[in-house]
Length: 251
Image 1 (tube, one colour):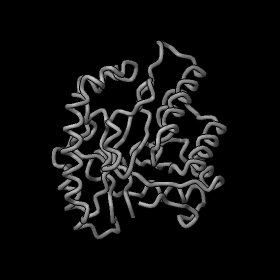
Image 2: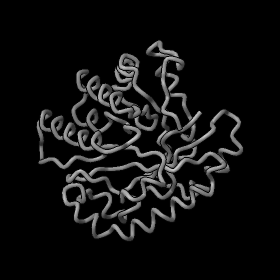
Image 3: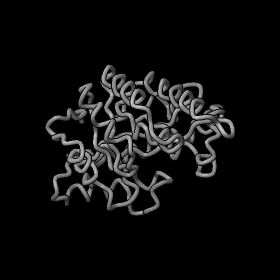
Image 4: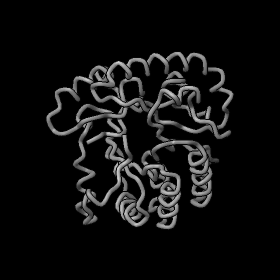
């Protein structure tokens, strides 16, 4: 199987200094439980910004901040991709998890697309006023999803995590429309075991209904999460769906 979403210590959410591309290569070589490949998808914001800027999220509303840090980030990303490339034979796949700024640009330089096999579009932050209404949150989430859909991403990362954590139950019509759009653009829906959401079961059922592409991602922040698909198989059991009913993104 393929873990289609993992992180190294380059991402600020991954605190283990040992979780390097070299570690993943060793892990895959010694793995006896069927994990064949891993997509290394560190955050664009962690590559392009120091932590104190990355976690403030100001670049979402002020993309000029990205322009200020672009050259340094480009150097860092180039070195990172070169390291991953060294371990391609061991099953490492170059990816990146992208945040999108309000001008529609992702937090990375598009010239690197030729070197990156998997682009994951994710929502981690929305620029909203204080005390927004649920409808304001939904509208801004949809606007950000529109930006992701307008870019050639391969995977929607934890599609409803941010929305569910801010409004509670995600309306079924939003889940269905998101899956439908993903299907129409050959974008895979990610089932993510680091963030376990109530929307995962209805999302799974909509994936089956629309015959959308899927990926299983651990979104590994710690070693024990790498290639651990117990949550994913538990979802299938709860929904009474066979893994053979799913169509996985070809990686």
